[in-house]
Length: 289
Image (cartoon, rainbow, N blue to C red; front, side, top):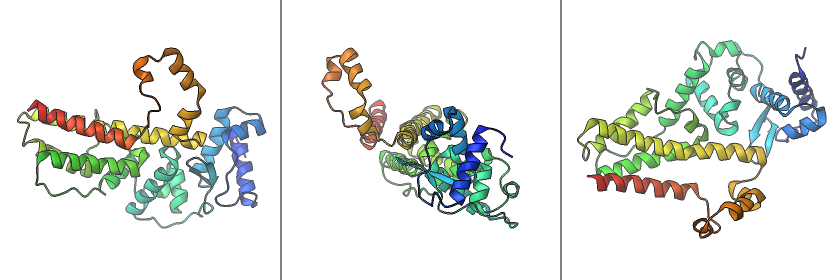
């Protein structure tokens, strides 16, 4: 029996999906539409959609919203899948729907096993996230440890950037103050530190620069996840939002000075920003020697 308004809304949507009113790929009512239809708070409607995502009934599509999943939740199975398949499925869910959509129950539904069966392979969601980090950074193929130190550091940074672009959720789970000691990250750290040994004799300064470079890639990548969420919520990309948001133009007219005025129609491009920042960091290491 439904426990509250969000459960009742979720149950009604499940019934409508099962009855064929919404077919795979069809958009289901948005949070705002559910608020208007049921007279509930935004948080209640959001919980209802989150419950459907967790159970595998819907998935999130950027600039569209919540759509019916390609297949109904799989029936419970008794066999335990391989850990690698579980982790790969978790990565796919996070890539397609965002990390907030990933729960042990949602993952179990996608894999086709009872939720408790997953705990034979993964003790907790936190451990699952560590395995996901190791898996996606394990995709990295670093160039041979030869050539100039700058070439190697740039290659390492750009390789990390590509991983972040494929997996926007990643920047939100990495920590610099409490680094995750997973094999793939340690391999990457070893590669960068070995390159820095050629120009930075002090080991503390070497590790400082490693953290600075890693932090630059991660902090720039945070905007990937934020923009993905904003597009999914509004259906509008960053450039369109700035062009059509009157508050931005009003604030610029009211508070912007001449320096801002000379940056008319700034073409926001995160890849260009990353390229500029990385070159500046590496140039700074050169000048400090």
